[in-house]
Amino acid sequence: MKTARLADKYRNEVHGTLVKELGCENVMEVPAIKKIVVNMSTDTSVDKDQFKQMTDELALITGQKPVITKARKSVSNFKLREGMPIGAKVTLRGRSMYEFLDRLLYVALPRIRDFRGISRKAFDGRGNYNLGLNEQSYFPEIDPDRIKRNQGMDITIVTSAKTDADALALLKHMGFPFEN
Image (cartoon, rainbow, N blue to C red):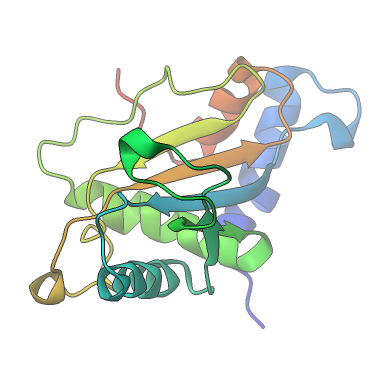
């Protein structure tokens, strides 16, 4: 089985560059991408057919069946009851993670209208990066003519970096298009 293109890039180019740039004494100190979590949530007024379509689209985008997330407690102002399905999420690791990242960086992000790069401020303080997309139609697997409702998604890239600066260096070398 052939490895993903970005996995090869990390192993052959990025790892060695980060060892020199960050001054890592141990090879295991070099930051790496551990997992990617893709989350789609919806409002409570959505019916079961639209919710099923949302989960099917998330499965198409990620190549993995999503886990349905349910409300933990009732909130009357939002017409939300405990146990109601409110979203879906997928955790990607290994080869599927690198393939999703490849499609995100080189297919989905360039399709965004007036794209000038992603924000450098979306790090959480522990070396993880959060990215939000407004539409699912940026991905080529989704047919724009069959979309009944635009659905956004949150993408969290979890790294083994200890600081945001180390994570920024890792993601830059991996090819993330950060704004200037």
